[in-house]
Image 1 (cartoon, helix red, strand yellow):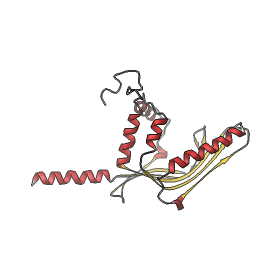
Image 2: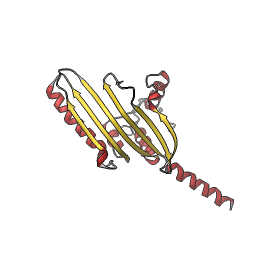
Image 3: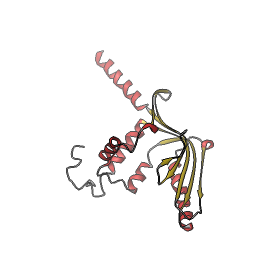
Image 4: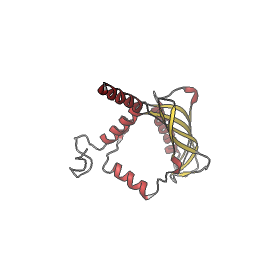
Length: 200
């Protein structure tokens, strides 16, 4: 009887764990690149964590995380040290099942060359189309436009409102794919030290 109860508890906990949803909500975000500058203070970037699809258990304000701090830089460098994050990895990540509940995106592209600007607009549409392909919850909440700016200078501005949901199994898939990016086509780690990931 005790063994049955323990097994039942484990099953329930696993069910709750795999029911976790991470919802990334971005409101009124305006970014200017390559300055990496958020141009409006009223924007919101939050990560909300739900269990059983509806119960919110946590909310993290991502705008409060200082990506330029030494602590954050150190953690990022440690996580991605030696990774070979190439086009193959990007293609694998595109297979991850995330849900786009809302997307309102405007991109403004300008370069010193009008022809390159036009090509950049085309590439931008291709990237966005691939990102949302098969991931949309409803087309009524999806809108994106990419505008060329012909001013003989380099400009890249983004205006974004979006809601993207990831389930726990999707997050596990992403972690696996990122780790897979550490290995080249010959099965060797991209880090020259043969022992770099021997404990994984």
